[in-house]
Image 1 (cartoon, rainbow, N blue to C red):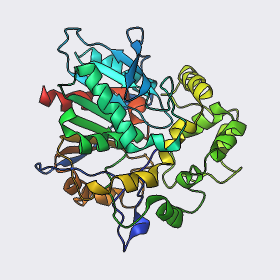
Image 2: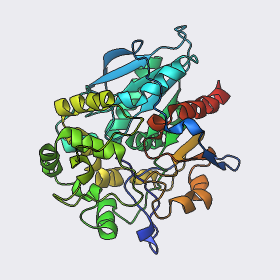
Image 3: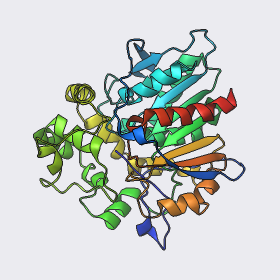
Image 4: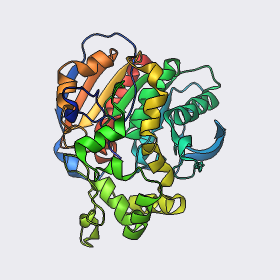
Length: 375
């Protein structure tokens, strides 16, 4: 789910959260940080997206069958492509509002179920879910939808944001510009192995640590029920580390009277539940089980930076924004140093982790306003 990784300082490592590894290469003028207050209608349920125009297909990419949802723009064949990368526990469906709105502005919008999710193939081996595997899927998908000779716009959230950082790092020529949400870029620390460090800082109950043993958390999720698990993750809005004490968590979802937030309908939740009951949680959780392997594999990129134009958006109620060190990283120059082409950081007041679903109109406007500069 939501994650924030920062460069781990040897003297202050408790103020960081290393779980991903990435870096960039580039230069840019000083970015600005905007704190935006949402309009009064932010608590109203978003207008139901019309998904009848969304096309579904299965493409063979990087050796796996990938489910891809697409909503064409003008249909001219020259429409700029936006590729959306989801996080945990999400699916292509998390981008439904963006696909509808941005396709109406002339973009060809494409959102896959990532490896192991939804209707995309789920390899059995844990080691088949590394950054290199998943970025390989994304590169192959970009080549498939562009003919192999064009760059695309990319939007990422949560794990999708982390994959997008890696994509920009390995294959910057594939990305025109990037809008990432919720998860900051995290430079690789050459001396601190991520999971043992997280365990030392946050303890054994920290959710990343609880996800490490194959099959264990899946068994617990099965006992809790898929709907309860998804409801808890999708509605989590508590600043601070996410801990999952065995047999003592997800108490809110056990309350039958617990209401869904306005942005998440029962119909939406049912869609997620159906897909996760069919596929299970193992594929998505295998991303977490490769955190240390990713750290080993990405050693050649230690100290690298990004050379892709970036806009970063985060909610001030997001767990990731309230992690120790995150605000200092954004406002103290660290983020700009690691992402030299950072154009702007936008902090949206009142929004949590799933900001693109909580207030899609605002997010859609930010995405279009940024990408329009590069058309």
